[in-house]
Image (cartoon, rainbow, N blue to C red; front, top):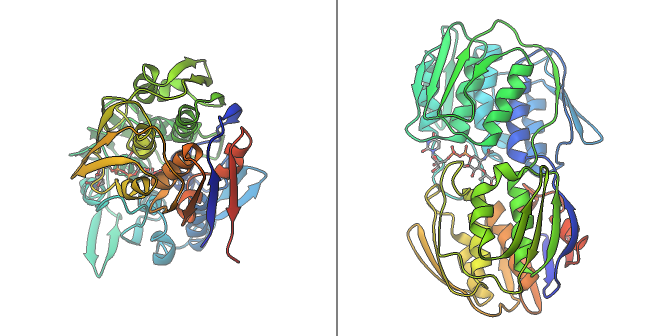
Length: 419
Ligand code: EPZ
């Protein structure tokens, strides 16, 4: 079990470069197998979830190679429609591979996917969407046996704008005969990027970023070179890190237009935030004012993936903050760990009430999931003394060398690896 030792008290100052988005790359990797021709994805993050997805693709006959930070995907020899249960349980993104394997091979067998333990993570919307395309799905023994031999375009309404279900249905429909209309879809920037990617491959899709996406099936897609979008969650993590330490940071290679919900919440409380075309500058105050209320919502609302980090920031802010987690049922596992550092938080169901304290004191804590782990690192930057964060494999799933990035702007973090 590896850990991070964070010594708090330094202000973060300097420039941080954001790399491209995990949740964009994972969707594009799934989409890449919809063509037999070569696909190249540039500037991809070398993080555990991407490696897990590469293992799943390799297991079904898709060749994926790194060339520096580009991924070269060749699925000409794609020959298996069984997603390996072992790998699938590592990452949630295995679920939307179902759509693209169905698109190519008209069949797929899969198990229920893995991913962060932040809720039940059901897949009913995925299955409802695939069945609306006349794909037959048998469920038994925890396995899903899907047959798309007679699949065709259809109409799908999502009860909830699920990111993964939106991606899965798009991937399953792009090579089908007929038109597919999906309503109440997710509007995340990663959905727009997926549409841009598939259109560049020759797909006929429109509407991404709005509530309705229309897909007109085509016979074939061709290879493409594409650069995924910057990671808005990493950029948000860095912004909050700046506010946590009273720092002065320029965050480069990000898209402020994708971060409006976070910026508007931080703007009045954390100091001066200046947005540029592809970067954000924060000159923060020594101690932020509490943000009175934050409710996580589907995009463009406040992102659930930044809830853990903004909640952590409230633990040292001046005042009281109420945070409501509307997306996932159990995404407050970081609260017990923050309390070990001296935070004053009460949780009832999906609501956390945070009363800011002047200081946090270092302690030994445990990461339980990706974004909760990141929140603990940020809290350690502020806490007096030393904070030891265990189970950092959760953090490494979605952050590429977070410790090294923060150390480059003044943090004092040591990574201890158990051999
Ligand atoms: C994606 O997960 C992201 N993961 C998550 O990021 C992110 O938190 C989430 O979208 C919301 O933005 C990837 O893209 C790999 P959802 P996903 O389907 O697709 C319910 C991170 O930290 N739901 O939009 O699984 C579900 O239970 C990760 O990078 C159903 O009820 O999210 C949840 O309450 C964590 N039935 C809500 O919808 C379904 O069939 C949102 O889930 C599917 C989802």
